[in-house]
Length: 209
Image (cartoon, rainbow, N blue to C red; front, top):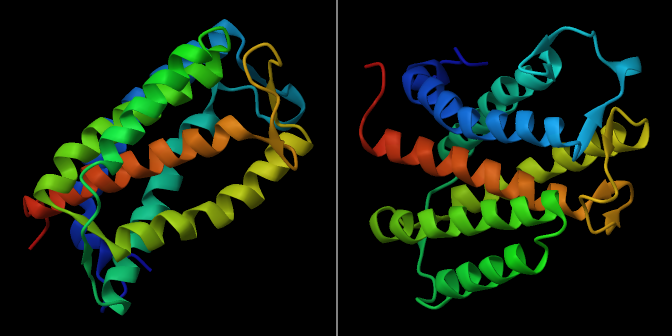
């Protein structure tokens, strides 16, 4: 479908690759460190055993296939839906920054919880500049919402089998079905980062003509 004649997603490959690499470096480094600390571990029953930086290769592939798919969804929505830019309250983003900064400190003894709150803090700090120059569009918001559908389905199986095992000392213990609440913040920060970086690159016309 990347070569489909109307959407022609393939023309955006340079921006897609840079987005995957730039955001992936941060989250893979976080993943490696969290695995080393024991915030989570991978059930050997469900992975091949091949590793890179202490992570299963399947985990590394996640940081390639998922952003590619989400950015494809984003471009598909842009083709079929008229894009609109929304105005948001000037106090919304600063308020979110304060809330997540406070939450990061409050949960400092729960490493995964504190880290996802810090990631959210960074995302909203970045959003301050992003919104100023590019705005928030209906396409960005719809892509975020749509992305959480497969996230919930896949993460349910990852945490119920379990493929991914969380250290109870690193999280609050609050779960949606079997999914730790922290994973929702993790996914939101990661998807937001992909979309913001990709949108910035698109505005810079980093495309194949």
